Length: 202
Ligand SMILES: Nc1ncnc2c1ncn2[C@@H]1O[C@H](COP(=O)(O)OP(=O)(O)OP(=O)(O)O)[C@@H](O)[C@H]1O
Image 1 (spheres, rainbow, N blue to C red):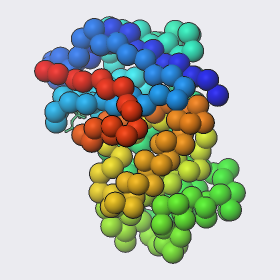
Image 2 (cartoon, helix red, strand yellow):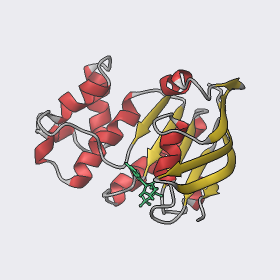
Image 3 (cartoon, helix red, strand yellow):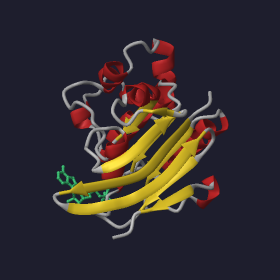
């Protein structure tokens, strides 16, 4: 699986405040890009702008050489996004939440994913009854269930305990080793994963 995503000269504004201008970087097979910056610097906004969910003032985006600036469908098809909030439905069980996102996953794959995030005993539990860290783990289980070339992870370590952090770091490492690409916003430096860092400065 080969991938190359190029962000060229991105200019993003929100509420008439400039978050970045002339920002360029790329992410390719086996590469981890860490987006860094203070609170409010625009890290989440940058990911949303790449995915086409908020507009850019100027810029160009290419996926494997193809200009996708005005149609991000190819990128959306190729990627998985885990946002700031776990994005799970409170009234659904853990199992039902995962089924909603991954309807084609086999029962075996689903159970394996739940084991990986230590939630195998909670599959019938309504998400409303989970702790913040457990909800985050439900969201992360999607990484074990889908095979997408590009991951966009927005503050994925939030609320995770040491075991959860280690499991996610190992999962990121295996995604990189299998030729995937990862874009992550985090305040952790992640030196051991050798990221390329994109710093958003005021
Ligand atoms: N839904 C929104 N509507 C309008 N403006 C927003 C919205 N979300 C964020 N912003 C603004 O965009 C700017 C960047 O916010 P963003 O969430 O991208 O920063 P961040 O670097 O991810 O911050 P943090 O580290 O606190 O998560 C902030 O000035 C914020 O007020």
